[in-house]
Image (cartoon, rainbow, N blue to C red; front, side, top):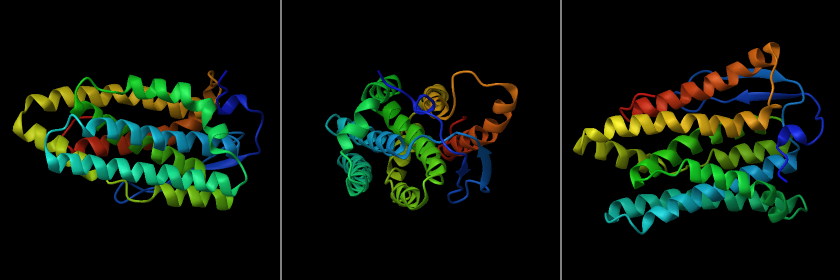
Length: 238
């Protein structure tokens, strides 16, 4: 049975920080009590997420006819794989088995991938860009809880994700056929709920009182703001 972060015992008080990247706004700091998961849980889930991005992008290569787009997908998939392998190396340096740390999250994160897999390749490309963007931001925020290990993770997540080319594929499709705009805008809105459930489930028990909601709100407000900017950059309404 999978146990999410809040089910794994009580943790010391930590600080969650949502970092700005580029022009994504100012840095926000929000203090939470007993928020972050155990470091092993954090590493296992972060590593499995990167593996999921790699798998999804790799699946798109074969059915994509355009060679330039194939290359773009290959680069983005390769970047996710390099991040995954870097996280595995970090786990091994800590004397642990990466498979043991990732296994508890295989079922829920595979279900998340299925739920955010589009019926069309463009939808799936958008899914990776949006969900990976939001969750990478979220895991950078959590990384502030783990000292030197967290700084290593943040450095890994800050590496080039090669996903700008995916944005180019999406925007080119919209320019060629305006009907894609409304379809992809709707799909982008649908992705938010599933993605926030992954992040929200990692933070707190299922029930939040009014005070806890108030403390959590700034983090998700910033995640949603970054999502809106990603969508706007593609000419889509978030």
